[in-house]
Image (cartoon, rainbow, N blue to C red; front, side, top):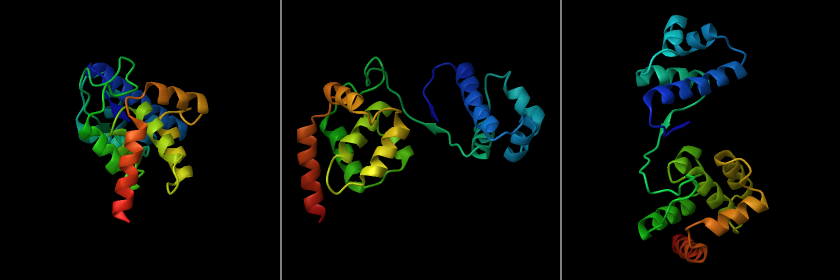
Length: 181
């Protein structure tokens, strides 16, 4: 769960709605969910009418439904208007992407923090096309980051709109992989 909303009230409402949905998927009432989170049912009910909440309470509610709260820095102007792509990729960002790809670490939270989810999903699909990468795991990661990102039409859109210079990136990645071997 990534928190990027501006209004505290709407953020808390959204978080609680998402976590409540996860509890309902498990067939839990508010009483059962609150108990598993170590809270009283009344505390959970009061949260729905409040505009703020302590982080420990939210973390406990999330953990009870096998979710995590993730805070990602969002700087206006650094993503396209639709939020799907970074506006630019400078050398520093490009180097971070090379390191991420070369690391082989496919932890979703790490990838979610590395850029807009749609962009990172397309990035995972790009890597899945390369020899020596775990194609099934990368495609699963891409689907997790953005549903539908593995379809050819969506990836073609990614290639068309992405600010990543794929040819330059792939040559840097290959050089990094050769050097590591």
